Image (tube, rainbow, N blue to C red; front, side, top):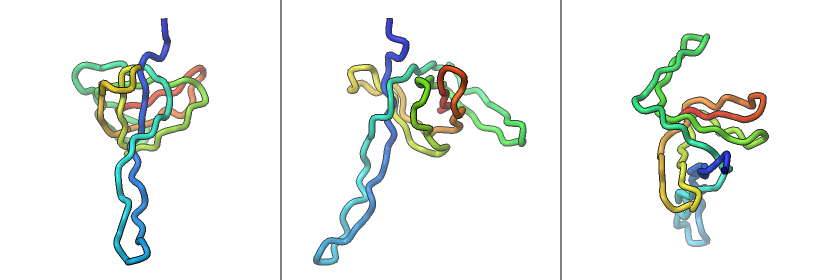
Length: 108
């Protein structure tokens, strides 16, 4: 049994540049593979309150292996089935956990 049966991608936008005749190019969206993961669907959206008083809603919790790149808050992400084709979730990261003892978590 695979502990991380899904794949996490982040959506990045390429920089806008000007070519030799002054036309703007770039600014295109690309999905970049981050890591294998496990998405746990929470059902209805839940609200998390942080000690500083800030709160946010999330409907999925994503578990990542230890040592994976941290996804900053506000980053657009996609979770796909292991084949990399079928999209399970599209959303915006609300809060990365940092590195926990054996894995990292991301709330979307």
